[in-house]
Length: 288
Image (tube, rainbow, N blue to C red; front, side):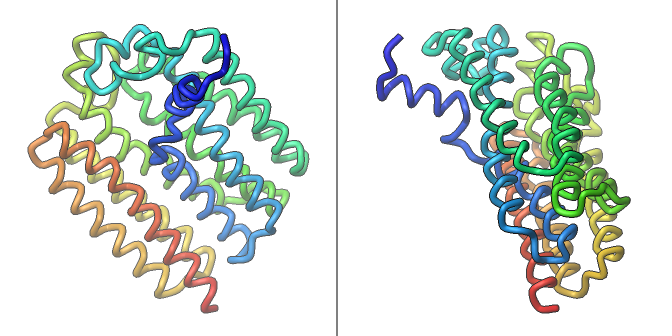
């Protein structure tokens, strides 16, 4: 099939290049980890590799997710217009695109040290298997948290050639954060998911969904505060955490009626949550 401008646009949509929120939610914890691992001065080659790797792996993850959900997506209001769901992209094309993106990301990892390369195999396994979790468990959001958080130990490994306790604290914070924001995201599709048989924490938590999102935001902030204390971070960092707590409170207001629009806006607001934490962290190191 010839590669036309329309075809390239379909591939870009399949990779969610038109909706970068997922890349940003994956990027912020990687940047947290790089800055803490390097005491505010990450090596430029490591920074470039990880930013490019986030773009490639998030794109690959979206492609394999849509491939896995190609029979469900046409039945869900939010996803029925995706390129695979509408037939604009053939499943074999999607698989080819996934392989190209994944291999490109792996080529970047090969520029790093041996420990980072070994950890990348776990990250790849998490990314490939995540889309199928919603068929078997009501906890795919936890699995997503592990997949999105795996960049944290990889960042420490690339920067320091080790994975200290600080990395696992940040990994835990990232996992809790993903459960919070992806539960809000799953609340958008809850009625459709129940109808087609897809599982999620939004379904599992039921009427406790708002309380559980609040709990996991609190756990995220506690773990980030612990990581900051271990890294010797000061007032500016904790102001960033306070601002993030305010954003978490705003998200509770947005989801108060559990409307599709409110839940989706709360999900998108997590980009600001991650950004203010990074801003506080980076500025704290800068002024030291």
